[in-house]
Image (tube, rainbow, N blue to C red):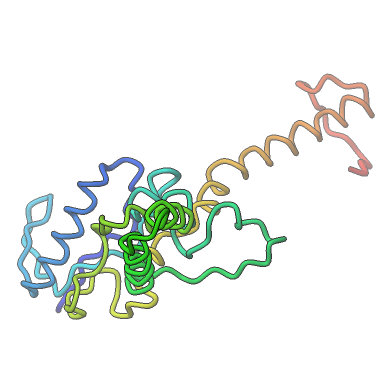
Amino acid sequence: MALFLYIAIFDCNNCDVFADCNNYVTFAECNYLTPIIHRLQHGPIQYFARAVLLAIYGDQPAATKCTLTGSACPVCVTPWKKMSPEHGFIGVMRTDATTTKRKRQLTAMAKSGLRGAATKANDQAKRIGVWPLDVKCGLRATPNRPDLWVFGPNPELDNVYQCMPQVSLHGMDEGLTAKLNYGCLMTALTEVRAVHQTNIAIVPPLKNCNF
């Protein structure tokens, strides 16, 4: 039976960005040679039909360093100043194609020879997260080889940008939820002390509580 080699959680917080790119290249090379016979870490040899990266998880600034998106959103082309809902800004989803197109447009602007064009192009590239203009993300798909996909077969949905979950949600899971739980606990204990004049460290069973 053919098996897939899945890397479901790729934690870029604990890895070097260049090492991440090397890992991606290794995946692409494996798919070029597939099917492959690979020796597992604990010894046995296994047959794999394809190497697949399902997702990359990371907090700031690791996430945007891996995607080369700076302070902009790694999933859509939204500058950080327009991430608030009141702006009504609808971002364009990032793909290898849209990112390459924007880089090409701004590179042409920078090389137009007009006064101040290069500075304006680089400033805009930084805002939307496609800077530096002369550097390509090492985790982008292999050009002109759709068969060597690593994130998935659909280039619109399966790419490094769409496989990078929202960093804000990742932070919510690890930090804000814990703070919210702690705040609720301390509020409840404060109410117990105030209403029942009880030491918050010793809370006996209470009957008919309304909070």
